[in-house]
Length: 288
Image (cartoon, rainbow, N blue to C red; front, side, top):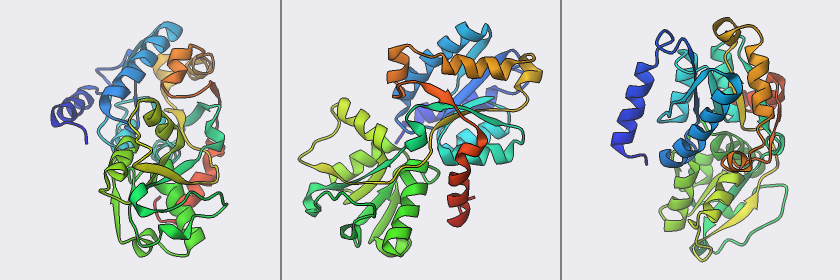
């Protein structure tokens, strides 16, 4: 969990960033899929890059939850956000005219990793369907609004195993972010869980995964996920053509250090229509 002083500071910062106060500043946020320290490091560098490319002040503001990122976007406390599939759909429904403008090269075919504590004895499977061995375990998702840590995994579980998570598992939890999901399953607090594949790989690279304690047991089918969404009124605020300039700046991002922080190999154009499958799944699960 995020430390209380950091939560309080983030809340104060968001409260201070009113549309008027930030009239000459492009403010953006990102879903908190990792701990705040890593997010601040990742996105301060992005803010500096965008400021140089766009010749406007750019500020990154952290938020405390996935829902808070959508609220900040709706309230015009931020004009740009790095959303997951579901949060992007939610934000665009609340702010008509908003546009998905860029996604990572890898994002049209994103996937989730289902992981289990080694004590469960579950063997990894290669299959198009979720493994029956997950039934009856304690299980943690990530944030309740996470595409890769909740929405699509719940869809696959329900589709493949014929029941809702509350029926499938002994106990269901929501860790809040991908990093914490790994920690909870590795410690045995939950027997199994699910997270984005890039977050898992990042945890491995950071030395936070003990393969003697936790392993991947199933890789989900692919689906569209993370992307940048911008409010539809930024051209009025920053000048005609600003949306196109912003999109091009994201597409031109080629600094290996910046890209590695996402991690992505680059960015490609995105449209609202690219995330219709996410919208449809959210509606089918009564999450939208």
